[in-house]
Length: 152
Image (cartoon, rainbow, N blue to C red):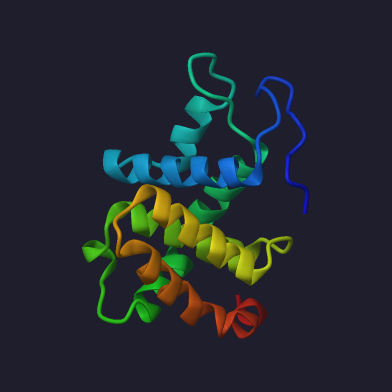
């Protein structure tokens, strides 16, 4: 897995996977706060001169999470032990959605990397309790990820 993604013409220089993932979380969070469609928000940003470049991986993650959101949210509801999606901090929910998407539908991202990256984003972007919460939820899903991939 390359550390840097190749530059896209009209989107600026190389952006690391970590930066692209963080940008996906930010876009999903913003869309939720605005009650807007994340893909539409993304489309407005791609190629726009007044915003930072949008990496191809960010696009893939936002589109993937949006396409699979019903399945992702169902899994999160089942494995969040006592937490409803409405009770979760919106940033945590965006981080969890990206983590589940990467574990189950990004073939080039190992489960451990998806969990580790999600925990890191929770440390950067959310509350002191969020990393442990994100790790617990994704860890539970990770234990059955192979079975889930076989049926999803």
